[in-house]
Amino acid sequence: MTTSVIQVLGKRPGDHELMHQFLGWQCRVRQIAMRDNRGMPDDAATPAVTLPGQSEPLGHIITVFSKWGAHSQTPEMKHMVKRTHDPAQRREKALEYFSSSYYQKAKQFSDTLTATFQPGSEGAAKLINAGQCQLLFEAYSQKYILQCKVLKLSETHPLYQSTWWHNLLFNPDLHPDTIILGFEPDWNESKHESTVA
Image (cartoon, rainbow, N blue to C red; front, side, top):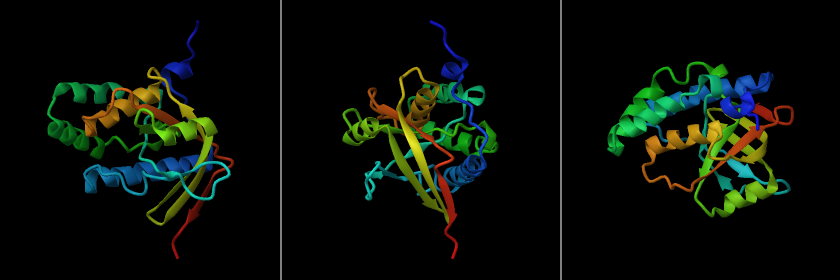
């Protein structure tokens, strides 16, 4: 069985004006979170998730924003995790790493966001069953409404690996059977609004 470049490296983002705008915004707000909030995710990283046909959100999820294949930093994150068993040291190294140049180049990032769920998560099951959802990001006077395809990622998927090692830097108690879902936006169906009065 042959393996495609996309399976090995991860999908390169397409070319859509809204996508470029969103990726640039995510880079800015996540760097702020790392530098000013010690990595604590704020509203810009925790969208409300709404299932198709529903008016009320299922809840909020914490999303991870990963670099796509050719720019992947997974080996570096894995090295940081394995370098020490001290959670505090890991966190400090991670904050230093993500606060510097990691978020400088938006074009290096995948437009597929990811999120982790506990094994047996009812919310994850609903999202997988629906196969699609809406993510609403509202922060820093910006609102992004993304219509997404929901993908359950296998452990070998590049974005699963990136998400796993990223989260392990901040959460030493990450469950080994954690479910990781990918949220792939349909940029033609997604929207952006400025919420400045």
